[in-house]
Length: 232
Image (tube, rainbow, N blue to C red; front, side, top):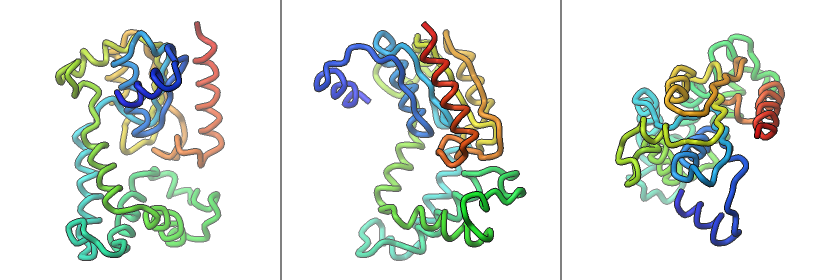
């Protein structure tokens, strides 16, 4: 985050940010901008994310890592070829978390062009992770698990203090059915932020409400961002 701040200020000469916005891990960074640079950031809109990764979320990610590293081809990270079996397993694990129970009950994967549930699991989820580098993916998961806006020399682990330092007008948008970042977690965070609103994204797309796959959810987010930018 400090390197991003240096890029924005030293390279581009930007002194004020009208809005910082991000999805998922980007939402975690959005909150970080708000608490570390309160005089620079005027508005923030983190969606489908959190200011601190919850213990249950950490447990979920442990399952993802175990699925990947159980592949013998991973070889402790010294693989000569991508550990495809492990990457496919990661896709199968994520499939049960990235989207909600009603999404699957209504077979909404058909809207994405898949002919069956198995077609969706293979073509979308396995295909998505087969494109990833295993060690890079593990590094990303480590960053996710350690996401905490108070884990720095400024706040020294005082999470409430970090939330209270966010002076920006904040519109926090959890997805109603997000299995990673539940609405209740964001409601608690907002209760400790001085100028914030929690506005859940309705619908059944779960975490992927923020991923651009649902036009309805994307429009909800876009409308909220326009409204936020229009506030003084």
